[in-house]
Image (cartoon, rainbow, N blue to C red; front, side, top):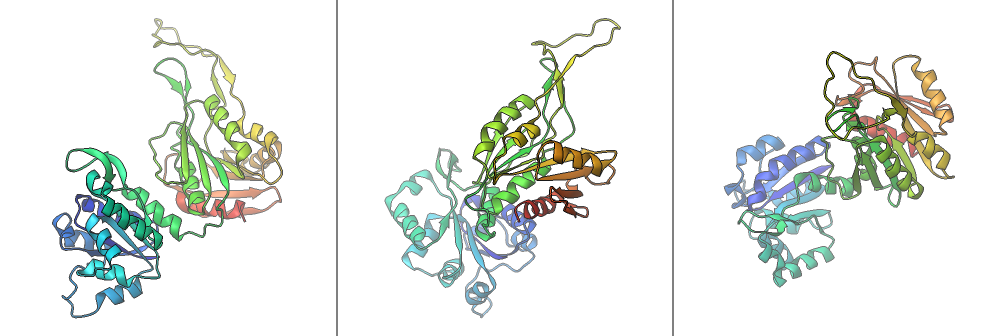
Length: 390
């Protein structure tokens, strides 16, 4: 999509380059339009460099009607930050600079605003009246959020983070074909404690599961993401994240959520075993003797959900194999009552744990095989979602 990013004169304007980067990463073309005061906080060179296009900031500089040609080019207008001033101008029909003129010319196309101002300004009746007017016209507001403000106080008025604004754009531009559905996704590793400082774990980063959750949300689904220990974050209004540590905690969360879901994609690398006992202190070395751990089996989340599955629900599992990959994956699909299984092979360079790419084979209960080339995990997530929800 072709997106015009409008930037106004608030301190949060310094976040605009990051928002441009996120939008371009999502596949959008971006051009920037800025007010004179916005350029006190972020430079023309920066905005033109990150967007790869000339900046529109002077209504008269070119001698052309840029506010019309840019409106014709753009398919969506995002204003971040949106100050009280620009909100008031649009609500009052005032067009006295490049951005306000563009906003009034942009009628009939989607507009998103991310308000940012002092908390007292945000609470003022005039601002709230203007915001209500813009909402009644179909302009979507993202934020503001509560937090520490540039003036040194805390309150509601902080601009939503670029990730949340980019997510709102994706929500507005995607097909929404899964709207009204709820999906469960598991991601990351599980840690099984040995003592207060050590654990049994694996190398899963959670990147595949988080990409799947985001792909489902982009299509309109409400997503319950149950994640093991990972540093990853996701800021999407339709993704609820539950953080767990152990396989038993993931089991409890997944089995509680699944009955109210249309489907589940279990991509987490769950530990098959855990120590039979966990010490509440750090175990010390005992001379030259080794350590012996007794392991007991963890509950099988995938098999349990397979036994719980009702008509109309879709259950998708992952199989990470090193030998007899497809045969092992097929057995797992049948044994655990899955509809699809996504096969990873550690033999494929660039696929598996801890990397940004993946290569998979999606095997269906109906015998279908859909093999992907090596792609980004976001692209693989899109392929998986399209396959299992078609």
